[in-house]
Image (cartoon, rainbow, N blue to C red; front, top):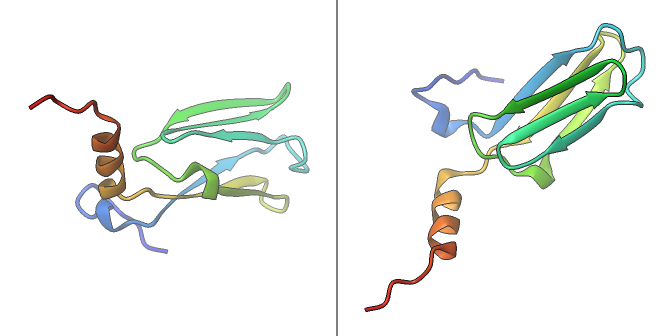
Amino acid sequence: MEEYDGMNADQAKFLVMMVEMPMLVRGHAVQTKVLEDIIAIRVPNLYRLSLGLPCTILEHSTSCFFDCKIRKLIVAMPIRKIEEVIDEVFEEAPKQPD
């Protein structure tokens, strides 16, 4: 795995997030919701986290799992290429009359 900064972020394929949950023993109660640029993680009565993401991701291809040994939730989110986002914006824009 390679780290990316602001200069080479266009080459990144995944956004990986690790969330420490020291009070959790098993991951069965973890609830996650991922939108294009927001992630929400919740464990009822213990944890609640909502974050804006630095890039647009493919929400239906996101995967996560809870590692019981280290008590961390690992979320892997594939990054949506900027070209796809631009194409989609122009497709949804209303047509200008000639």
